[in-house]
Length: 474
Image 1: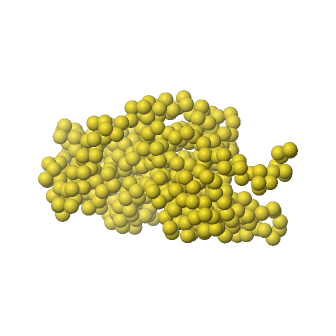
Image 2: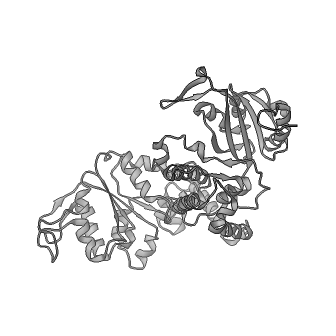
Image 3: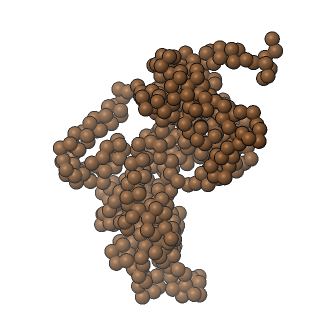
């Protein structure tokens, strides 16, 4: 029998789907399930007769799964990959692929954004269970059918691919974004904490752009990148003749350049002690004095600072002024590391793969085995590391399908080592569980984070940071 593309019948194709370890749905253009394989019944714990003939809206409202990828495929007329859950809390990596009617002039329909797409005949959806991967435990046998396809992601509008908005699919980041949006409407001083590479600068920019100062400038200062002998003149400017080598007409400082906008002081912990005193005066008096000058200049600037270090510990060690710390820490926001935001990993991979493909003129895709490794990797370098590795993979792989072997030299050894050493009963995990339980109980018994801090004998910012870490809120 000739098994070329034109000779396969439906009766020949369906047994192939039955042999796949992925769950497979076939829905029609009205979102009605037409067929599913045995793996689908097992993964969603539902009988064939309970699925076939029902709409995705009905299945979704019944809690069989949520959300529905088929609805998005029908709406956007392109392949979609999401992570969602079944009614028993299993986490599923699901890809919905549209199959279009033969191309004719009458089969093109509006797809939004001025684009048009052919009409859909049906949607093939494949799902795999990634619950164990999400928990960093031993992976189940990896099916070969699921591939993260970046070529379809290229259909995204450029503004979506290059948009620098923070990815917030995880509950932890949704809490951060919600707090940021509330703070964007006020001018309070904000201190953003978190590990290197988590997106503190992007969050600061979001605070600026969502607020009432969005028309003003957003000025970023890396306090650790400017030499100590230059940082004062960079921040506050200088007058003509202030020092040898100064410009004849003087120079405007970065605070003045941020007038009516926002100044973002990144790596604030690296600011020298003598400059900490002057920054405190600026915050209190809302004016600056250029180096060599005598006349203060009024400023109207919102100050956002960020650090990846423990400022409280630095205060105790005498390396950071306590009064400045409390002035900066009016409203703290802690950005959790990527290992605590598992739901954000897949969208970040998708976004960065699409971006690299567009920038480099490539058409790379990621196999399910490779994706499994990427999903269970702890990402110690956070988003910055993820961006670098995806770009490196797109550049270095000579073939279009990025496999597990391609990423082996970058991260697999570390991921496997973490898998082997993972133990729910480890001391670190036990301490975290105990800490979360204590904080949960304290939230029920006390009215404010300050009261909790007093009882637990730690600072209020520490309590706020811990609550954010565990997804708890007052």
